[in-house]
Length: 232
Length: 260
Image (cartoon, rainbow over all chains, first blue to last red; front, side):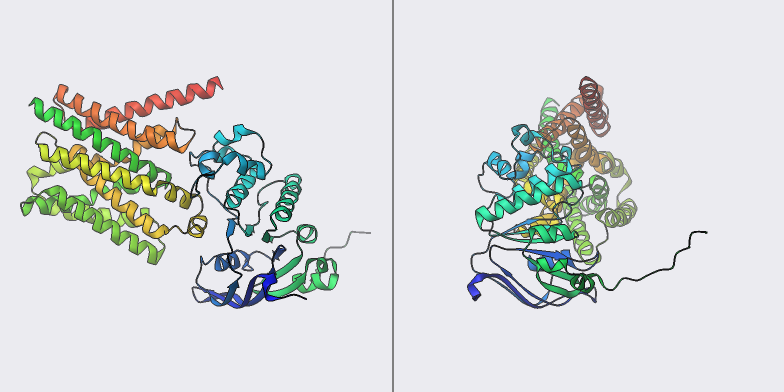
C-alpha cells in the first residue's frame, strides 16, 4: 500500500498563464520517491514550462507539495557556452562549495582528467551533457530535473547516458523527472509517464506506452491523406 | 609638472584595471557596445557639473547610474534588448549634452583631460577602482552562470535581476572615472578592447579576467606616458596603445593556431 511518505512530489490543479495565454491547464500528478517520471508531449505542449513552474522559476497557481528535505538538481535543455572562456573545472565549482571536480566527472563516467582544463565550448555534445549532469549531481540532490538530457547528441551516445543515469539513480535512490520526445526512452528508462499537451493526456505506468490505445490517447487518431497513385 | 604625470599614470593604472575587469563581463554579456554607448549618457551630467560649479564627474556618474537604472527597469518591463534601449537613451543624452555644455569644455568632455588631476582625484580613482573590482569579483561567477543559463542561476538562488542592476551600477562607476582619462567618446574602448584582446589568449575564466585587467592597465599607462612624451591628447594615445596590445594578441593567437 502506498502512503503519503512514499511520494516526493504531489501536484494538483497546476495552472500556468503567460501573457494571458493558458500554457498549462489543471495539471495533476504525483511522483514516487526513487522512480523516474518521463514527461512526453509535442513541441509547445508545456513540458519545459512545467519544469520551470515546479522549480519556481515561473508564476503559477495550484498546489505543489514536495516531501521534506528535497534537494533539486537541474539540467536545462539549452545552455550558452560556446563564447565563454570557462574551463570545465571552473564550471563545476560555480555556485558550489569546495568540491572535487574530478569526482564529479567520474560520477558521469568522464575519466580523462585532461577534460577539466578544456573550455566548455570545446566539448562534444555528449561530453557537455555529461558535464551538465555532473554539475547537477555535485550537491547530492534527491531529485534530478532533466530537460531533454540528450538534446543535440547522436543516437549512439544517448543510450550510455541513460544507462549511466539509471545507475546513479539506483545507487543514490534518487528520483528523476525527465522530459523526452522518445518513446523508447520512456519504455526503457522510466517507471511512470506523464503525457502533456497543455493538459494531461495520460498519466500512468510507462509500460502502457506500448499499447496502441495509449499511443492514440497521447498522439491522437492518425489523419490519413490521399497520395498520388503510381501509374499502372 | 612631474607630479601631474605621476598622478595621471597612477590614475591610469587603477582606471585601466577596473574598466578592463568590469569590461570583461560586458564583452561576455554581448554588451560591449552598451558600455560604449552608455558612456555618452554622461555628457549632460558633465555639462550640469560645469554649469553649476560642482565636480562634473559626480554629475556624470549620477546621469550614468540613473540612466542605467531606468534602462534596467524598462528592459524588465518591455523585454527589449539592452542595446536597443541604450541606443535610444544615449542619442537623447548626447543631444541634450551638446546643447547645454559650454563649448570650451566640450572637447575636454569628449576626449578627456588629465592635465589638471589632483591628489584627491588620484585617491578617489584608486578607491573607486578597488571597490569596483572587489564588487565585480563577488558577482563575477553569478553572472557567468546566468549567461550560461538564466534558469540555472535562478534555480541556484541567484537573484539575476538584482545582480544585473549591481553590474550596471559598476559599469556606470568605471565609465565615470574612465571619462577623466579618455573622455566620453573613447571610454568605451577601455571596457571593450582589453577584454577582446584577452579573449584571444584565454582558455579559462581566471586567465581571461586577469589578462583583461592587465591589458586595461597597460593600455592606460602606456597611453598616458606617450601622451606626456609626445604632448598629444591622452584619449587617442590610450586607444592606440590598447589597439597595439590587441594586435599583438591576434598575432599570438594566429601563430598558436598555425603551430597546433
